[in-house]
Length: 156
Image 1 (tube, one colour):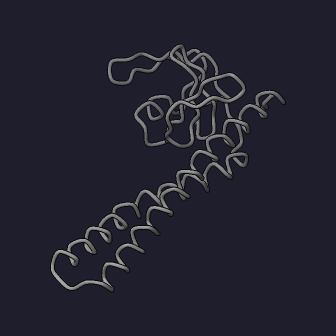
Image 2 (cartoon, helix red, strand yellow):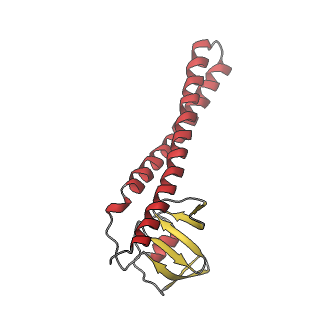
Image 3 (cartoon, one colour):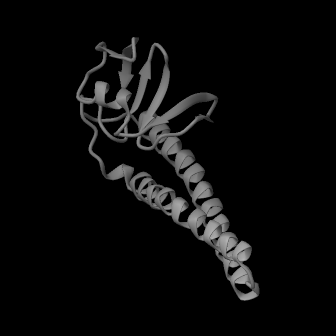
């Protein structure tokens, strides 16, 4: 399947916007982790009682809890940065824009709704129930997820 210039440009613009969103989230997470580590370090240096020890543990627990989010964001950033390397096919796959009767979706990374060139998109991951239902489908097919039917109008 060959994309038109317009489709390729739209796909790149959507991927770039989602990449920016994910990179910003990643930077925010790193800043929060660094702040928590700094707080734990400072509290640990001043620690004289069990209350202070508990504050250190809380800071460390927050860092550990965020580490899986940081790893997931790193994975999504790598994926989005290399989305152009995926050859387009007739079947819905990673990197596709999918136009349905319920909105526009970009298969790559989960996200809230975002806008590119006046159109609203929602990012979905390859782990989402919607993508799993759409995977391998073609234009004109319908899929059902959680009692909601989606008609695939166009994908590329």
